[in-house]
Image (cartoon, rainbow, N blue to C red; front, side, top):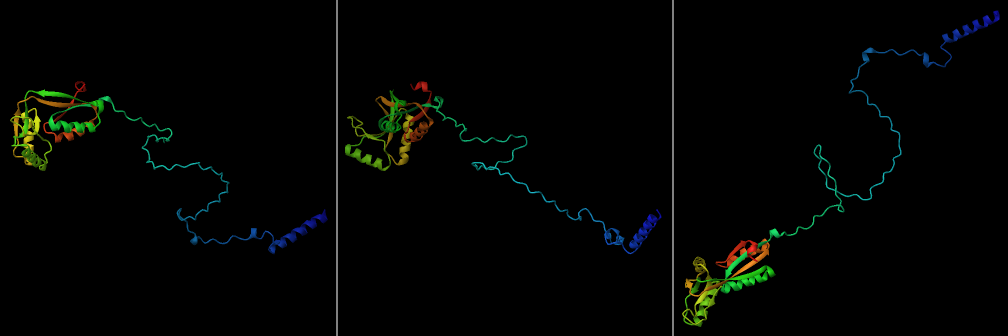
Length: 264
């Protein structure tokens, strides 16, 4: 026991001597004294002046490929819908509903009465209506008046004089005329239009005078006046517009829209 005591004591003396000389070389950093801090150099940083924090690296991930659509359809930009509005649903051409063609309703058809005509006016009006190819929609009726009026140039000496007067009328742009050939007091007179009323005849005479006709006058016809009235059944408004424009060339004619029941 005495020997063990002296051995432990000697070991402690040796360890104390080593520590006094600076240690054994290991763990030196753990025993170095902390450097002196200088308080006058310490400055607090604001939150905006703090050093940026480096973002941690994001671990790489394997992206899953997304299949592209088979076909992309370009469309016009759509405005942002109003709050609460439901988004519009696109309609494909296959499902789009095409409205059927609008048929012309019978109520949209009209019936007209145009007239009345005689002489050269009757011939011209017949040609105009024939060109429209109205078929069974066109009919006519005859009207007879006990008394009528006409615009005429008094009888000339002979047929040659009447032909010279016709040449003068053509030069003035007059196209409606005929030479009276029947024997009697009015032979070689030149008719410029026949009318059922004196007012219509006087209006036509005024139009001729504007064109330069000076020798014409209005007279009452002693014989009955026969005229023709054209009836147009179930036609559209386009026909009415055409006849209204054409009627300007026929003095005394009238285009009326009548109930269809009266035209049958």
